[in-house]
Image (tube, rainbow, N blue to C red; front, side, top):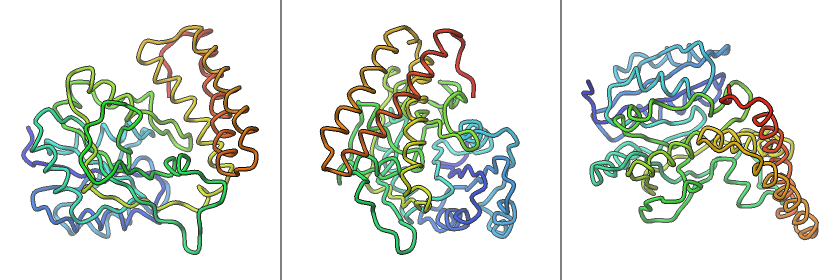
Length: 310
């Protein structure tokens, strides 16, 4: 039984340096009827102490989840919460004071709205600037998300709201059996696409997915994420995640090998084509590298065609 209109959930793993600000931003919302749940996903740092320092606030609840994995932690947060809408904020993000009220307004206006998220801006490390090789497209890998000033109802899963600023209707989440634990980050790997997969499921079942511009969140960019090596690693896992998502959707066949190879060649060709443009050159190199991850995962799936495991 649910008895609150909305629950805010932070799933965290060893992010003590940002966690306090994330929690504080949720405890300072302008909305009255809500709770905040922090799911400690097997952290080994001072995460518990950071939360306990704020437990005097009756809205806040601490939950420990020993099985690592973002999707596992999200499912735990949903089970521990009591809101009809579950809003997920990343542990390195800061919500605007009107975040929850903006989300609730969107759901109240559309009873078939299953998933919603809002605009995400970036907070760079002190004295950091955007590298010349960082394109707008790759900046989205850091969490940036902006579809404009108006509400957008999404029909293309690639435009899915960012997981760091993400909400979902409980009835839909229960309908699909929760987040698929084969997708989403586990420890230090960068598996993703769980939100894209959720959008596909929602649209197939006649639900709506929306971008709500007033549901604003700012995302802290860790210094290491402004290094080329991080983007190559992120690209690799994006390719792996895309292959997993296709397999979960029932598509696992030799055409994946053809498509993966074609995309590698396309990425390399464009990186040479844009040799004089550092951002476009790097963007396409990362894309090509990611397709190697896709191709490797597709080959593994064809030779051992089992459901992907985390």
